Length: 104
Figure 1 (cartoon, rainbow, N blue to C red):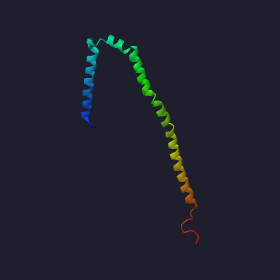
Figure 2: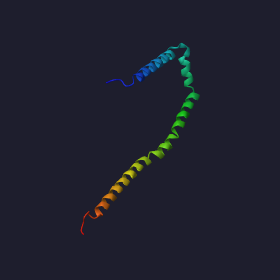
Figure 3: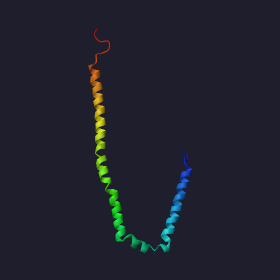
Figure 4: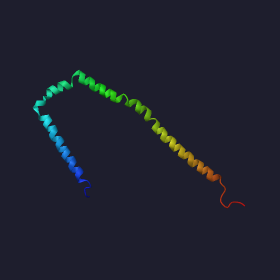
């Protein structure tokens, strides 16, 4: 099977290689002082900020989901019922029509 987009594959591989080099450089750099970074990231203010960020992300999500999810199955059910009603109406209307070339 021929490759359809070899440029995309090459670009993705190059991007992953650059990302790996950057991560290796950051992790192996002694000037970052990871013990200090760890202490700063686990302070109360940073953890409170993280907690508030997660709360502000999830709080508006709940009412949105509560208002959008229940109507979806109901809308599908209503659409299905209206199609069934339409088929039933066509079937009963067709049954009540006189046959072509009927009694004269």
